[in-house]
Image (cartoon, rainbow, N blue to C red; front, side, top):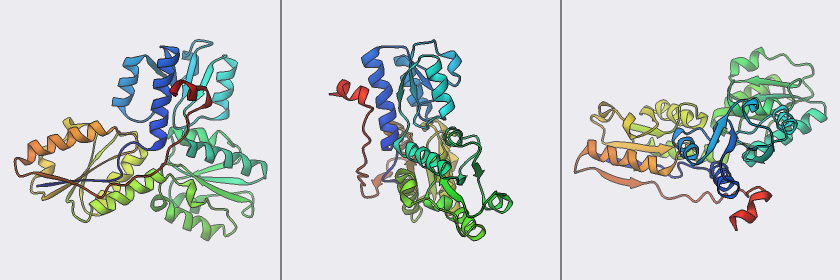
Amino acid sequence: MKILLASPRGFCAGVDRAIEIVELCLARFGPPVYVRHEIVHNRHVVQDLRAKGAIFVDDLADVPEGSLLVFSAHGVSPQVRETAAARKLRVLDATCPLVTKVHVEALRFAREGYEIVLIGHAGHVEVEGTMGHAPERMHLVESVADVERLAVRDSERLACLTQTTLSVDDTREIMEALRRRFPAIRLPRKDDICYATQNRQNAVKQLNRDAEVLLVVGAPESSNSNRLVELGAKAGARAHLVQSAADIDPAWIEGARCVGVTAGASAPEFLVQQVVARLREIGGAGTAVSSLPLVDEGVVFQLPAELRAVES
């Protein structure tokens, strides 16, 4: 059996930055450090930070007044920021810069009198934060069917944004449907789509050329991880989402000559290596491990100004 590793895989620049922000806060200010929502969608990362003194909350009422609060990589609505200010919380913002960019565009479109179509998944924490920037002007669509049902006030003043953890492939059909129904709509530029999501999907397409089985290391709550599983299954692979090596069922691997392994953007590399070790146990002595050509994504996001001196 052959194990083929995707490249790129795992942590993206936004996740790296968010985790580093929490760790630097703990080192500089000491515990407890409160974090609104899980900093990223991975239980192992969250458990590690919790053990170091991070406290994860969904309701700011659970944060004592004057405490240090970190916003997660997924971003928050203006209402959450106002609540934090009212409670006199010291805030450090770990919102992914790509999410912040979408928030800025939502505010700009709203100021210019546009209605906004947001392509995304209902209930996802990033979507909730983005919609909070222009709730009276924003429509959420998840599918082409949603586009067909969409009612807007003025089709000549319509713009589109997307959840960042979608890819060009994920949104193509929906954007085409929007363009057909509303020819004047202002569609997002390609650089509004998360580079990491697209790159990881491209890597899975390469894996699919050889792999009969695809294992995606990620969390059930992770949008980009679930899209990788769907992409593998669509290509005919036996695709499974695993949170750790313990989730692997040996029956999944039976008869497979090649097993592809990748990881969502919030999954740490040590989990990938544990999955590989488990696959080698299942495959036996003849199991070989190789990787797609290494890809350096070349993206690094700057830390908040309050922490740059701490890092140096």
